[in-house]
Length: 170
Image (cartoon, rainbow, N blue to C red):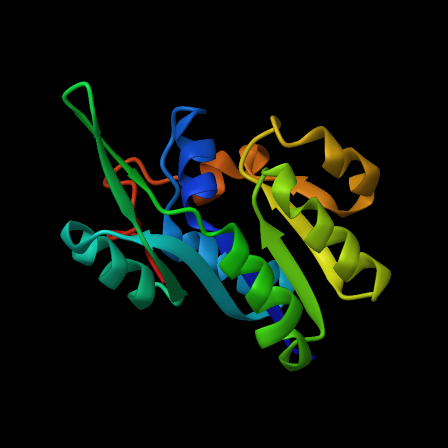
């Protein structure tokens, strides 16, 4: 059996950060492997050249990174980076990787992925939707038996040192 995870990196990061903690990505990858038998974990992330150290850390933790070119905006003296990965994540889960896995885990709280979750559920390929926090889209309530949150795993998956999992034990 081969299960894959499809992870909205920005949504995961911001959802965890909004709760005041940092996810240890090595521990999270091991959690996905042990709990859901995830053999491939695709992390969809906007590409920013200055974040190369983060990308290297994520790859070493066992994630396959799928990059989206980022758009950098300068508004009122502030720089914002936008790397919307929704289309790439749906394309990989529903087409590119679809025949390679038995079940899928989607990591997000974004209701834009409800159509993907429903599509996979109707085809008996949805294993779980993992939301970073309890403030996930109300659309996912229709799939309540499939939804889990990371908040109860804060002690198990948290990293007080760096926030990116550099010092976790394998």
